[in-house]
Length: 156
Image (cartoon, rainbow, N blue to C red; front, side):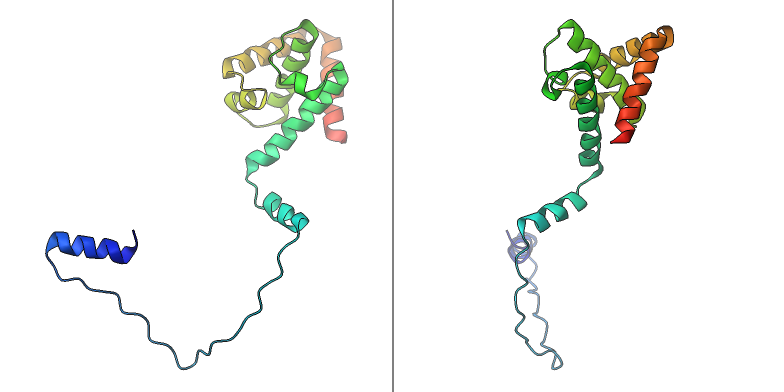
């Protein structure tokens, strides 16, 4: 329903006369000019525009993708395995390590991290972070492994 139609309906309902908007009078200084249409942007220009206008979560997902890739390569899994529902022993350690790194390297909340790790609950992420933090504190080899992974994340 247009504004005009809405005004008419309101006026009929309230029993007041309808005041129709008057069109603006043309200015003598304005002369119609034919403007050539801008050339259509190329697909790559469209992609650049989309990426530049992208909100922060897109950039965060790139950061998480980097974490997924580095941890998966380090432990010998595919990136899709890190976010899958499989729960084999080595995969769980890799996934928990990736969640721990995501918590250390990003400012995202536990629910956001869980969403980017296959839709997991925030308590699952909390368990993984606490477990890996305790392990890093108790096991110097694992702490060194975490530092190696963090270095790999920052090297690109």
